[in-house]
Amino acid sequence: MDKKADREFLKKIPEDFPLTIVPYDELAKNSCMDTDDLIEKLKALIKAGTIRRVAAVLYHRNVSYTHNAMVVWSVNEKDVDEMGKKMSLFPEVSHCYERDTGGYWKYNLYTMIHGKSKKECFDIVDRISKHTGINDFKILFSKREFKKTSVKVTNE
Image (cartoon, rainbow, N blue to C red):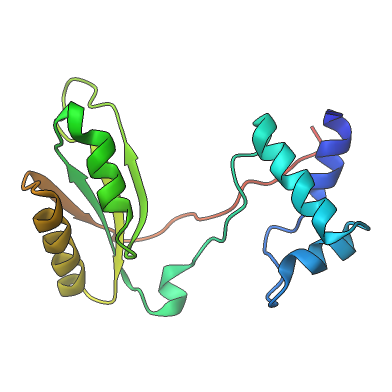
């Protein structure tokens, strides 16, 4: 792949996708290419590892999800994959990932949960706990958001 051409292609992809039923059609038009070609190009960039994914960023507070909770779970190492898959199936979970404990912290599986109230977040955590059988967790509610942006392609 031509890295310079890839960079130029990615610069044409806006930070905010067009708010339309067919956003890829509009992106293709702006990039002077066919929609199928645009999608194939994005797939190729993902396969090559140039980009990880193309995804929507939901600004939760703008759609009345005003409470966010990072829930840290202590999961047996051999069960992490299974539990991560189970937790990620909950629609209220936007992020689910494993982290190293660093030897000073026993929580190795993290979920980001979004709700319309603290009580709703507690209820979601309770459902996840019952579904997985994991009872060792901590709930860390967001107080303030300082930054939330997409990755930007620069000229460098």
